[in-house]
Amino acid sequence: MSDTVVPVVVIGAGQAGLSVAYYLRRFQLVAGRDFVIFDRGPDAGGAWQHRWEELRLGTAHRVNDLPGMSELGVSFDSAERTIPARDVVTDYYRRYEEHYELGVVRPVNVTSVVNRNADLVIATTSSRYGERETPAKLLVNATGTWGAPFIPYYPGGQTFTGRQLHTADYVSATQLAGLRIVVVGGGTSAIGFLLELENVAGTLTWVSRRPIDWVHTEQLDFESAVAAVSMQDKAARAGRALPSIVSGTGVPVTRRIAAGINRGLLVAKPMFSAIEPAGIRWSDGSFAEADVILWATGFRPEMRHLAPLKLRQRGGGMTVGAGASWTDPRVFLAGYGPQASTIGANRAGRMIARQVMALL
Image 1 (cartoon, rainbow, N blue to C red):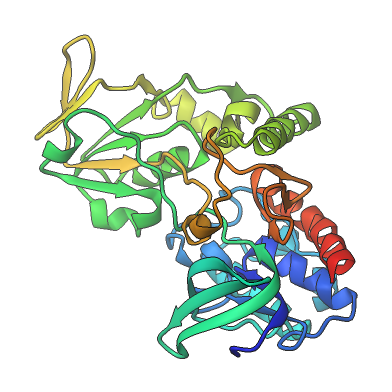
Image 2: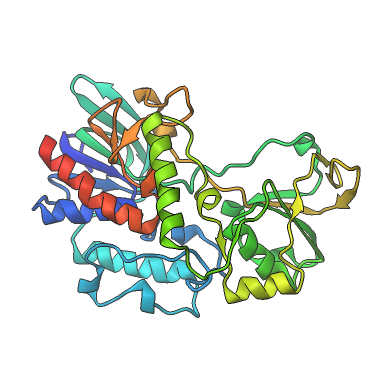
């Protein structure tokens, strides 16, 4: 790390950050001299290193290969399915970083980004490097969403005497053995939790804020995927809060999910109206006791460190087009909006790197 000005700072070494870095290297930029990557994780793997042990690649969202990964002789399509997904992703990403000499600096937490003269000054703190300030000409923010879990407000939430967990807090099914669990959410994470907890929990109740849109194909069809990306892109360009990807694509019914539906496990109740100390209450007056409420309600883009730049719009989002901020052209947002999927992040890496090179 250095307090001297660097041309480009990339924040985050997940799929989006690594994709941008790969293309910067293709343009002959050198890590540590022409660009630096800050990552807060203790190891490679982005948010995947923090996911729960039972999660396997075969049951998670598909993880697309990073650009140039074939050069390492590995692919997520043929990766081991019997070990935790987090271990596979961490291993592959670590090898990727080393192979392309990306020089990721970790663990480093970015606390703020401010304007100072003509530079963007990135303030960081680290158990290894202490507190630093790094001035940069351009910034690529690739922080993803894992650090910003979203839990919606419901009356009585503060009175609940049991445990409230979010997807980001979930460790394993065994830690919840024998408990009465309410799973909240309408996406693949909620469904994954229900399947894992089925024979472990004392009781399971599934509630969703919207009806589940089952798609009877094991993979999303092209038109649905394009429509979902278009929704994200329109919201990003308008500066609105980003819609859920699942709301635009539905949930593919795999064989495992179909079996869960057939045996009555994957049947969602409508959302409860209030939380009480001992459980949840529906609008019709019925009540379910609960020891745990597991919120699989998604994440929001993690942008708190960018607050001093005043990029957020009245609509709740940031005006972003083709990966670039329309408010401050020195700032790029990799993995934001239509780029949030692994394949979207990879394509955006090339696009953002080209724009970065045009400004250097």
